[in-house]
Image (cartoon, rainbow, N blue to C red; front, top):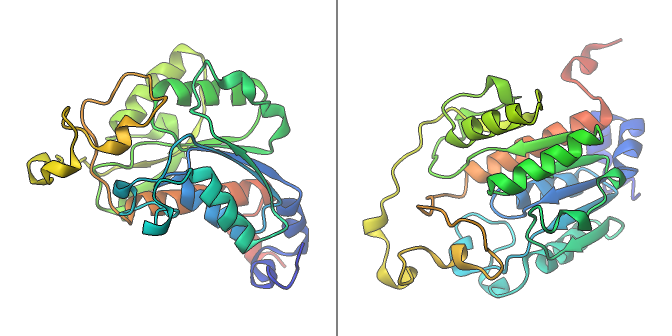
Length: 264
């Protein structure tokens, strides 16, 4: 590990904790609006190995919020762009790419026992439940992002156990499904903001296809039940959620708490 590169982080967490991060391997499922910022913060914090899972290519409508989306990267696989950026930040970080849409029928590709932390940033309930169930069966730490679409106030984001969530429709569905599976605890990032109604009539026609949905929801391989409505999004709520998730991962891996600053 290049200690000079992470000197300012070391001043906060200490050398022992930096070694813990360097020796940790994290997997991030979904590297879009939320997940791309999770990866960014973890790599800049000194994580030693990271797996990135996403089957999407970057498209025009990603430009408003996703870290890897630039005019120069449109049409490229997200995991390829992410790998290049990760190595530009920290050449020593070990990157494993998975051009995979995670669902129960692709889940056996992954050996969760290899990971020190599992991050769920995908938006399909079936996939999320599969990730969480497998992580819990191995007693692996896992954190899951709830709904970040149709929200405009990042100050309404919170970290809590799934049992203490409110307002978020996705969190409600996940609570019920996890209860059926006898999973009683799950750390999540969620928003207490009431979702706004997307202003679909204000989107230019050329941004829609014949079904009225945006191109990014029509990627190849998306065979699950289509969403009734493409959510609105922005540059600040998904990114804030991603940063909050990364902070929790770092704190959990190092067992660092703010109260540590006041210990003699």
